[in-house]
Length: 358
Image 1 (cartoon, rainbow, N blue to C red):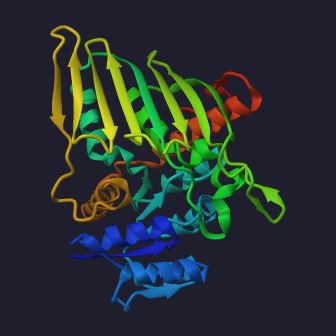
Image 2: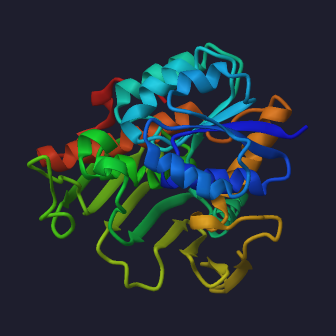
Image 3: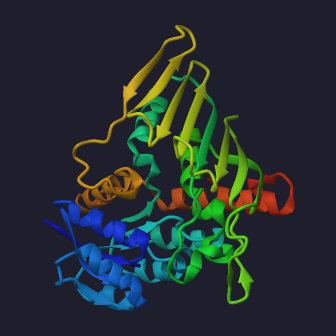
């Protein structure tokens, strides 16, 4: 049976999801919701000639419409908490875009509600599905690298794009750059470490981007570069090197995992393979990392968002579990919040300060 999906929030990422869903043979967009006319018009364009899709200005009307079997939330970050409080009172499966929420408290609210219901709640941390990263994770999970001791992630990319009403120019709306964007990388750190994070050190600033941008008399306050180091209970260390004014490099992301027996490297977009080195033999081999032909729409995330939607649909259809859980969403935000606190207060931040258990 083809799953009917409603998309709540039809800005840039909402339209990306519309294209992913409609490219999937097992799903179709049947309803959209956004309080603003401009993103609704973008959604109409993404839908093409299909004018049978129901439109709503209020997500609650969509949820009550009977038009959908599941929903995708792709609205601005600061709206996720209120939207999820409504959705999680229903039995409608939901995939919510990252970050799950902008604060730890709001994430904890979502975790508590999601655990009280049977319907699926999935968090959109899809970088783990980019083919080079997926192959890297396969190598890590195989044990070939031995005990993983170090992980480094570099993202050197373009500045934040303009969003509806410029909501993404202010940290109070996004959660801050290290929550908004870098929750993807903190998710990968947690996934590879398989151990609770213990402390965070960070240095960062807004040095180049948006310095001359003012909205209603207020200057944009979005951090555009940072170094973050995370220490885990199993003695693994992870580092993030972020620059959002470095769009002229060969790769947008470069990831290296170093273990007691070897090292693996992935690059995105990359050369179509990852590298795996063995300390004993000194051999370095290539593993194919080209995108599967089964990915019907590559989109803006090298096929990862299509894979995410496909996995979500399959999980809902078989009453399966979420690959990316609300706990994953929570802990990706915890590290981002801790990193911002480390920068703001110029000190090492202990995760125990947040009174959490992993």
